[in-house]
Image (tube, rainbow, N blue to C red):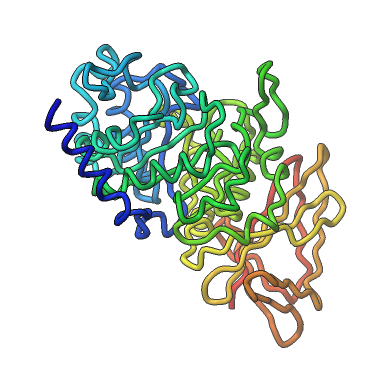
Length: 405
């Protein structure tokens, strides 16, 4: 106990010197798997090891999904006599470090969850008053990622609370990605970039394409509701390498979405540079869903090193057009049928100009500027911008093309 108190005291003394985040992390939006959407608090050591194995054997790791993240419920209901967090004795009888070491042995990174308040959202011990102590424990266990929630916070100030944890993590000395999860309630886009590596912009996602689910005290939202819930034009000005807007985890593979909805869900998350965090049981993925999740061309949009978040270019009838500037003056363009009916997409590129006034990017289509088109779902070229683009789009279906010379 004495040693622990001395260590925490040293951390507190270093507070004034080490008041920053680890800047070398999340230079592109983070990717991985999180336990919450599918399993909630029903997690254990064997399951986590199996998920790490599956991330590798399925090929998901090879395309960039490189985090295994334990959400709420990994800890015991009480801290020990010294105030330390204790892994749940039945779920994790060998401790967290054993699990982290196993995940690391697979070439993956490991993450944990906690909360800025006195309790987590599921009623386990939160970090309020224990930030530096908990940061030391995370570093000792080999944690690479902390998802930090916002339950049981009373009248706490969000910016101050997240700053405290940021400083604690930095002082502990191990680079740990800080994922801020206060649902956009305190306008984190105004203060979070120097504090966290990503911040949630909305409430929790729900396993539906477009709906609102009433929990009695709060709502959770379908994927398309989340996309349209905030002013994306405002949010994109804030995001960039090392600091991303987070629209919550993916619901792809949880048995509700059609393949077209899964494709569109991933494509919009990619274009808007949201972290790509899986929330399904990756030990059992249907072939069609695995093909969606491992589409390297769609993932490349999200991971483009330019780091510019995309935006809605416009709407033609029921077709939303989302665009994203990328390196080498290439663009990703998503045509999304946001309707309940099948439609025939007809898009004439002639004399179209797409301008990104925020980041000073522009692409012009005319006789002198002809670009190739690659359909990123079919993974093949489909002509050039000299021809009118035509395609049948079913309900909720999208066409995503890469535009390049």
